Image (tube, rainbow, N blue to C red; front, top):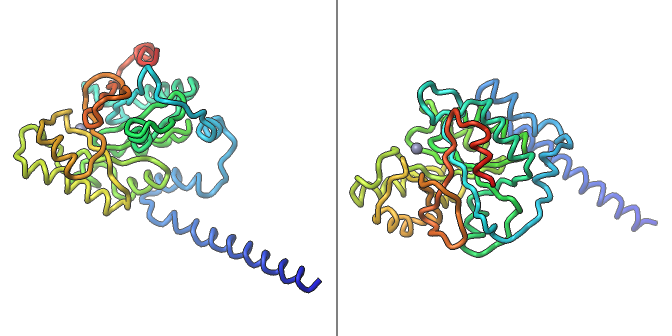
Length: 284
Ligand SMILES: [Zn+2]
C-alpha cells in the first residue's frame, strides 16, 4: 500500500514537472517575434492546438518510396508579390493557386537534407516529393508565402544573401522563426555577385562568410548554395567541396534526377503571370 502510494506520488511529480517545463517554454518562444502582424501570424501554432486539417494528415503519414524515375521537381520562386514589369514577382493569388493545386495533388515538400540523403545515400523519400525554393530572402516570403505554405502543410528552402538580411529583406528573427518551423535555409552568398567573375579569394569569402553568418545566427548547418543569377565556374565548385557545401542549385531548367551532379542541380523557374495550366504541365 505504502509503496503504491509512493509510486503514485513519483508519477504525479513527473507529470507536474513536464507541465511546468512546457508552460515555461511556450511564452519564451514568442519573445523574439518582431512586429504586431508577425506576432498574430506566428503565435497561432503556439497558442492553439493544431486543428485537424488535410495539411496535417498529408505531412504526417507520407508513404516512403525510392527516387522517382521522373525526377524530383525543385521549384524556384523569388518575391511573392506583384512586381509590375518584373516576372520574378509572383502575385499572392497565383502562388496560392499553385500551392493549393500541389497540395490537392498529394505532393509532399521535402527539405534540402532529404534531397541530399536520397541523392547521396539512396535514402527513402516521401512519395510525390517536391522541393520549394525561394531566392534572395524577400520579406514577403515570410509575410505572404509562409502562411500559405503552412496551410498546406508544406515546408520550403530559403536562399539568403547574408549582407541584405534585415535591409528591406527578411530579418534574422524571421529566418530564425522559419527554421524553428521546419524550413531549410541555404546560402545565396554575401553580396549576390556574379561568382564566375570573382577571384579565388573573393569567391572563397562569399562562400565561407555567408555560411558562417547563417550558421552562427540560426544555429543550423548550411549544406546548400544557390548561385546568384545561376552564375558559377570551376573554382566555385572546387571551393564548395573545400568549404563544406553538399548541394548547389542553378537556374538551369529541369528536374533533379538520380545520379545528377549534386553541385549543379536544376530547378523549374516559376514566373509571375504564369498561367495555371503551364504550371500544371510541369507535373505530367
Ligand atoms: Zn538571386
